[in-house]
Amino acid sequence: AVVMGAEYLSSIVDERGRFIYEWQPDSNKATNDYNILRHAGTAYALLSAVDFASNLKWIDAAERSLDYIVRSAVACPVGVVADQKKKIAKKAMCIAENHQVKLGGIGLSLLAIAKHAEVTGSTKYITLGENVALWAEALQQPNGRMSPHLAPTKTYEGHTVGTLEWVTEYYDGEIVLGLVRLAAVTKNEKWLDIAEGMVHWIVTSRDAGKTTELPHDHWLLYGLNDLHRHRASNPEHISHTLKIVKLICSAQNDLRDSKLPRDRPDFIGGWRYPPRSAPAATRMEGLTAGYKLLRDFGDANNKEIQAAKSAAYTALQKATSFILPLHYWPETVMYYTNPQKALGGVAGAHADPSIRIDYVQHSLSALMQMYDIMDQKEKAAKKQRL
Image (cartoon, rainbow, N blue to C red; front, top):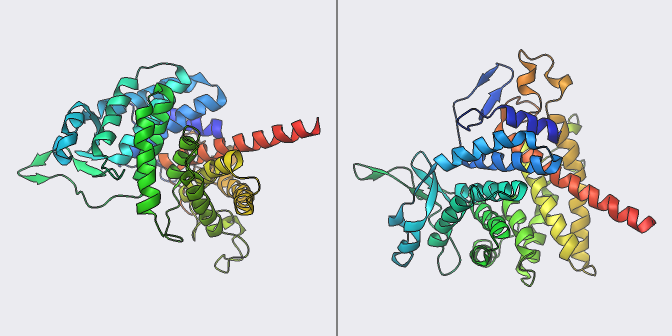
């Protein structure tokens, strides 16, 4: 599934570096929408597949997609940052789309840039990455928060393009993970300091006192897992991971749920009704990161942690069974007008045949992480038998 998915993604990158954002296999048409955050996340997933499968033939397509990010880089909107940070902001570069700079776009671009350096050993995009990371530094407030999440880069007749009011909670985790991954390849502790400050604000302010209202934030779980491997003395990483992992596991569709239609066993392992591929894959990604953190750093004598780790693995097994049938295999594309165009893609849902790049991105990432967990479990079991 991972190899076929990577083949699909590499085949839909044009010469400009843009992906076919959404393909409708039933009508044999593409949509005209685009999203730079999903572009960057998909570039990261494709590079991860190169690493996973040791297959360099996808590198050219991945680098074209990174070059598109390079061409999206602009001077940052210095006017929206605090006066004492303007000097930093003037040196920064921002990733813009439709005259807007989104914090999540910065984070996911850093993620893709860092993955390229890790996979290829090349520093081709690192200078841009560090200049982009300066924007996060410029936005960080004394309490660790970064604001604004969304800023205009252009004005028309005194009216800014876009709004500073609506943001998604996922931007926070995206920038944390991007900074940690950049730090890992540049060995620059400053990026870890900034990420840790953001995490402290998330745990002690944004999410303080929340239980069922916590977002099922896969990006944050990735970030906590990675950050803890550099800053293992901070107990916030494990305690917050534990809360989110338990919440995701408890919300998964299973046979005990009275809302589950009795005639839809294929809904088991997903989330929501009706379940879709992307929400399931993102939660699966979060659980893989949470499982790894609890496995490697959780107290072996803490019953709550061990129970959550076990529940996460069970949920991951069910989620894998839910996700795989939504991939387009040879036998599920054979009746389309252009079967090769859909092969390796991932459907939006059982009743939604559309293939959007983030459906493929998240499913590939989830499956690669799950394979790694299963491989580690098998190796540990083999070692015990010897």
